[in-house]
Length: 395
Ligand SMILES: Nc1nc2c(ncn2[C@@H]2O[C@H](COP(=O)(O)OP(=O)(O)OP(=O)(O)O)[C@@H](O)[C@H]2O)c(=O)[nH]1
Ligand SMILES: [Mg+2]
Image 1 (cartoon, rainbow, N blue to C red):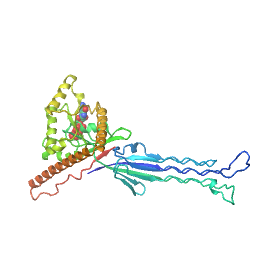
Image 2: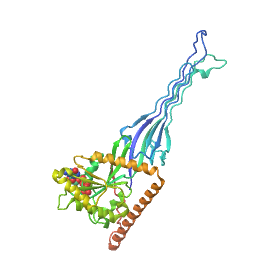
Image 3: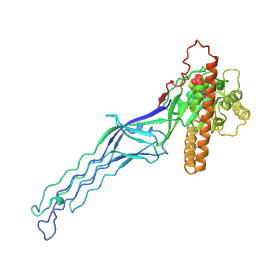
Image 4: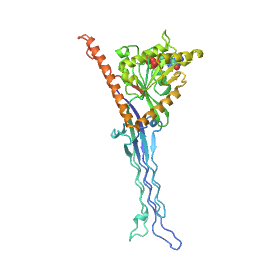
C-alpha cells in the first residue's frame, strides 16, 4: 500500500540556430569569400535523480520547461552560441513516462541517474560550408531544426518521512490540514479518520517532505483494539514520529495520562520503533488558560520522563506549526547528510530499520494468528482487509 506522488509537465527543447549567409568585406577586397557561420545547437532537457529531493511538489507549481534556442550564426565565420542544456532534478525512484504514449522513458533508481528527455534542435550551417571551386559565392545555408517537445508524467512511489501518532481527537488531521494541501475530515469526536492520509509539506523551493496522518490509536491498539495495528505499520518506514497530545481533553482524562497510553502502545508494538526519532507535539494550546499552560506542559514531560524535543502548538490556529515544519525539514536534511557521509552510521540505521520491520511483522502476524484461532470454523474466512485500504493523497 504505497502512494504515488505525480506531476505532469511539458518540456520543450531549444531550436537549433539558423546558419548565416554573409560575405567578407575588407578594405581593399571588393567582394570577399563567404563567411557566414553556423548556428548553435538548441538546448536539450535532461532529468536527473537527486537524493536531496524528496517529492515532486515543485513540478506542480511550474509545469512548463523550455531549454534555450541556439543562436543564429553570424558573419566573420562566427558560430552562434549553443542553447544551454536544462536539467530538472527529481527524487530518486522517479519514473518518467511520456504522457501521450504511456511509454516509460526511464526509471531513475539511483542518485545521479540521468536521462535526456528531449533533444535540442540541430544547428543550421552557414554559407561558408557551401563554398567550392565551382561556387565561390554560395548563398546556400540551412535552417536550425526544431527541438523535440513532449508531455511527461513524473511518478514517484513515496513513503512518508514523518508520521503522526496520537489518540483519537488529538488533532492529527487538523495538523496535516494546517501544513499541507491534504484535507482529511476533522470532527470533534474520536475515530474521525478511518484511513491514512498523506500530505506533502512544502517548506521552500525544492524542500519538502511527506507526512502521514493515521487513525488515532487507543489503549490496547497493539493487541488489536480499535483500528490500531493495521495502521501502526504505516509508521514503520517513517524517519520521524510526531506524538500529538491534546492538552485539553474533553473527558476526565489528563494530557499526561493520555500521552503515556500512546508511549506504552508504541513500546508494545515495537520496542525498536519506540527508539526512533520522536518529537512531542502538545496541541490545542489555545484552549488552555495562560496561567495553567506551563503546569500542563510540565506534567506531560514528567509523566513520559521526556528529554526529547517538545513543541507546543495550536493546529487549529496554526500557532507554532510553521516552526515545527521548518525544524522537521532541517532535521530530515541533516539526517540524510549524516547518513550519506558515514558508512557505519548507514549500516546501523539500516539494521535498526530492519529490526523495526521485523518486530512489526511479527506483532501483526501474531495478532492475525490469534484472530484466526478465535474465529469459529463456519465464519467467513476472509479476514485480511489490511491491504486494500485506499490512501487519500493530496499535494
Ligand atoms: N481549539 C483547538 N481545537 C483543535 C485543535 N486541533 C484540533 N482541534 C479540534 O479537535 C477535534 C479533533 O481534531 P482532529 O484533527 O479530527 O483529530 P484527530 O487526531 O485527527 O482524530 P482522529 O481522526 O479521530 O484520530 C476537532 O474538533 C478539531 O477542530 C487546536 O489546536 N485547538
Ligand atoms: Mg483524524
